Image 1 (spheres, rainbow, N blue to C red):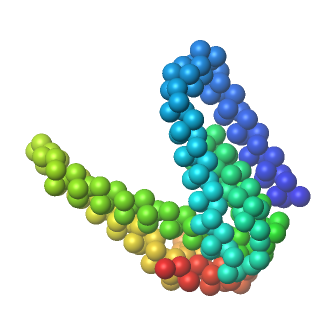
Image 2 (image 1 turned 180 degrees about the vertical axis):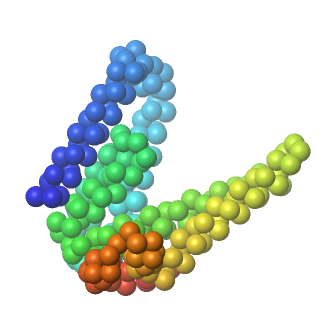
Length: 210
């Protein structure tokens, strides 16, 4: 019942966001976006669809060692999550949708840890690609003033944050958050202990990352 309520809320939020988008663009705006792009619209759509297949394959590779599940069920969860992400602010409401859809076919710990590990891997790949691109750009483009130094500092900060995320995942991200909540007195000792027991398996799965 809770999953169905969450899916209904996400659907409503996505529908409202789509209605606002349609209202802002109008019919002429949609025609310009699609017809004006021409054949590139189909190429971009094909690339986007291919990315969904590959992303679903990534999640499948993480969840398959933990529980048996069909690739197409993972694909349905990934496609649904992306659809909600594209239509809602923050690009994150689709993540619980993916998890809850997977939980209909695999244990909770497997669903949560697979999506978390996939997202961490995605951040690693994205930031690594940015870092390589920055180095190539600095070798070929002469940025004015302190532009090059600023770009390097920002890139180094991004790499440090993602590296910290990986270290956190390997040390037990959820247990660390629970300890922090306990120290800040946001959680009672009994609740932290109860949640820690429930989340221990998820942390154990995530520690395998890397």
